[in-house]
Length: 225
Image (cartoon, rainbow, N blue to C red):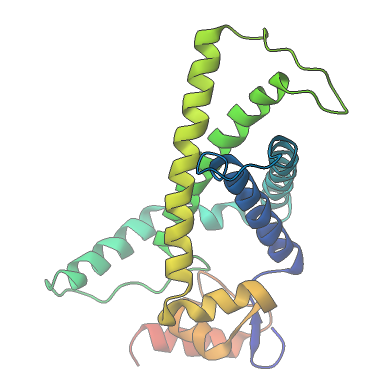
């Protein structure tokens, strides 16, 4: 943290996010625009974007596993309890207030898990499909698998690609919601304000180094003092 700004996303993570976004959108546009009647040479752009997407995901997996808190994005028992409190309040049943989040909210963790499953399915089937096209690095081998197996791979690839469109629409919608803009801005410049940190996060679950005073204030805030 510097002054009133608390670092939420490092530059490397923001760069990964936007490279993945561009590569994924390039894959989707080159896959679906020809179906809608846009005629252009799409195969080369599609497979290059797919390779870039694969490299970005591998970078993210290695970085999240070795240099970041991998478990911060895992949905756990405390998230179940917080989600239950939120649902009871949303349905008008009252009860104790929802728990303040760690760095990521339960919905963010669930959404991340869903996106991970969908993207990994797209990447895995896409890498298999690379064997059916000629590139400067290898020659095509369409006989590597049987026709029925290729049919299943194409079906899975297309189904999860369409699911990805829905997830992107949901992601953009919530990112542009006025009450979520404080998080969206952090994906551009990396930081959130001190007020947003205290309002939305539990400093005990997402501690900011060398900021004991903020931790004490945050505990008082979460306790309703």
